[in-house]
Image (cartoon, rainbow, N blue to C red; front, side, top):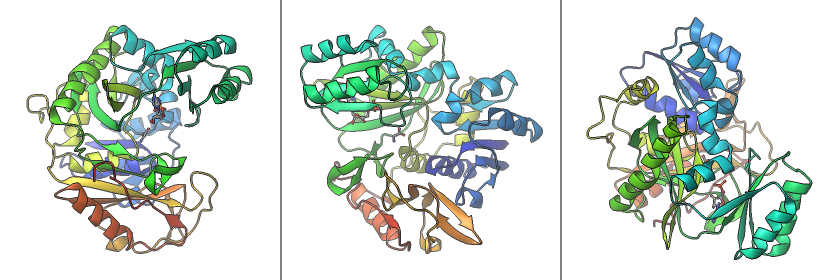
Length: 418
Ligand code: AMP
Ligand code: GLY
């Protein structure tokens, strides 16, 4: 099969790597890809939002299967366009992507189908939103309803903070004209449950956890994720099964009932609260960096999974609804540019990668034959072991082999479990 992957980060590198393990993958392209992906696939110089260019490429090169990584490509309508052209693509339509792009859509769906989540209301008027916040316990969670580059969620500890955030979102339209979802604050450890989905067919992946803060001890600003690991010792098999039956499957059924059946990766961002497991958010795609620790554990043939589901069929490799997974633990560490998530410089040379067993490139480029940093998050180094402790030691050992003067990383990934 000829396969096209859309995207350019560590997530897409992990997808390409998983595809490359399949005997069914005859040729893999990645648009636009990066310097690491180029070692395993042919990179194509097309932007991940260039719907026209991507569809033309897929037709001209007789691509049998396309897999979409980024939310931006989904929002640009790449799946709708490919489907209209009769091309096989694994990813949700724009209408189904609303489960991620619209907080209000997701919350109303959960309310209607009794999927456990924090109590909420949504508002367009600043005064009404403020009155509701005043009527609920603090902290208040305020979510701008739309894409706000990761800055759309405010956890307000005081009424003054809530007031300021509501003014930004509803009076000054800081992110554009939109709504705000106000929800109750929940507590407990967060985890990610990614499932391969096609309509009502749901094939769960192993659980993982991301680390959002920049520095050790969960300190510093929020980032796109500084590390991840799998499995999670604090969620039992029974709890995973419960979440599958009470959250992930009902959500897939609900999407189908609402006339926007979901095909792609449905990502449950969940919290284990004292009152049970609840949904914090859904994403309509593979998580980054969760994918980089989850897919290395997949034993089943991912080409078969993607291809069958993209065509609305059951993957033949699934046994009683489950795919096969390796028992080993994975733990991955992000190496980021100094200054990330704020401003940072690019173009620093990276050496020593030939000594490293498993590394996914998040933001690299090659310049005159040298590998250089080319983003905020640069590399994702994956350690493996019989347990998480061994996987962390393995990851840290590999990180130490990488030479670059402008990178930093966390040393405590997995501390929730260890
Ligand atoms: P979201 O974009 O909805 O995932 O929110 C970003 C982050 O804010 C989450 O990963 C949580 O850490 C936090 N958060 C969101 N909603 C809640 C909530 N209801 N209670 C507590 N924390 C929350
Ligand atoms: N790791 C969080 C995300 O992919 O949204």
